[in-house]
Length: 303
Image (cartoon, rainbow, N blue to C red; front, side, top):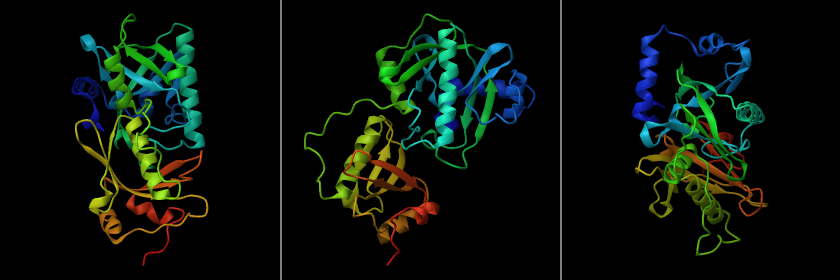
């Protein structure tokens, strides 16, 4: 969303958008040499005529480094979405195709032509919201390039402009949080969650998950607000209010309290967070909007 974009980046996008003729996202990549652009409009990178590689750059993830240099971190984890959760089969394939083209540009010492893109939903939900659409897409006049490729650390660094510059460690750390690329989270000194309480295990899992992405996850369950965890960014802005439900083998059912249902009716940023296999090695979670909670497996009827 525009409000998540650095003002300097947004200014360039707006100037580009307002100075030229109005073009659709399909028109833009077609004019850059993408064949069958209409069929490929939802892709994240393209091999265009002349072996030019074009890639979307989500403006929400662009950071400004020393000297005003733009850069963004690219997750090399094809399985996980920004904001957490597993990608669908289609999303995994798109991520693999994009990374394949970016690696090809790196190996060839080739630059990348970029289209700067903003989205209609918060970046945490850009891959999970079915209604997510491109808000603005403009071609960038500056060339980008892959400056760093770190498979062990699961990220690459894309830099705008001439080669020879890299962000420092502090800038990289801030960008990791912005791009949702987790860092190692230290073990809680209090030890693991109770082995007989899937709710406690689920709370512990989600707290670690969001902390690993650079977000603050506060346990507010004792306050009976209608949600258990409040997720906020470093500036204190509340991003998600999670009503947490943990399930495990033999304990897959759960109910929503009166407070949770009342809070759900208020809408964003409330979500139902269902953590499955809370004790096992395959622990994962899924977030449901208020309009989707009846689809959550394990939800028992109210009353």
